[in-house]
Amino acid sequence: MTTASESSSHNGTAHNGTAIPRGQGGDALSVAAREIFAERGYHGTSIRDIAKRAGLSLSALYYWHSSKQELFAGLMEDSVTDYVRACDSALRDCGDDPVERLRAIVRATVDYRVRRRVESTIAAREIRNLEPEHAQRLAELRASATRLFQDIIDEGVRRGAFRCEHPAEARRAIQAACNAIPQWYDPEGDAGPAELAERYVAIALRIVGHES
Image 1 (cartoon, rainbow, N blue to C red):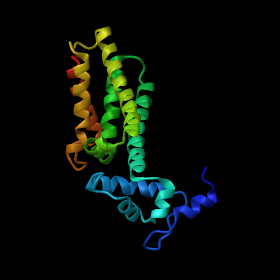
Image 2 (cartoon, rainbow, N blue to C red):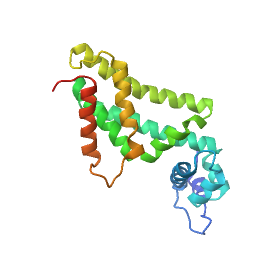
Image 3 (cartoon, one colour):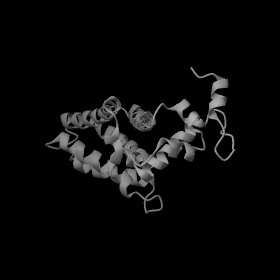
Image 4 (tube, helix red, strand yellow):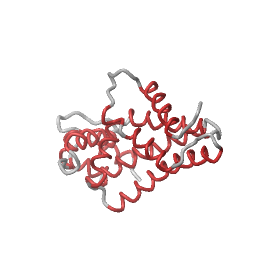
């Protein structure tokens, strides 16, 4: 466990002489890693690059993360965990109607893809660079989100709310559409996150054959 004195000493001093606020060294590294992995890719990024961007010494970086792989895996896991929690939270508030549940999970997915565009882009391009142990853990998290989607669609078909012959393919189409958002979304474009979410809800309901 990290003590207060250890945390203070390892937050350290930036290379430019500016003190990193107590307890914020890990946050600074996460921000720096996101930026550089997005700019240069996993193999184009060195641990020294990340430390420099964060304004930390290498020794301070190694206090927080034992390797570039560990830092990368932590970044990906934090992002996917955030998504799963967002979906769980959205579904808790909407009852058991599969139509409302599909609306809720699509809204949560669109919000996540807009809110965490950088991490989504990194994952799409670089996730193959995870070592097997980390890749397995991330695959389990992503599978849990996929099950949420699939269970909602299957239940909607069972109840007659959705009329699609191939529920698994419908789920893949909806998720693929949502997952592509970070590739093109422009915050200065014609639709904000809420409007975009409603557009994708309408698309998802058409895919599953819901007649409103």
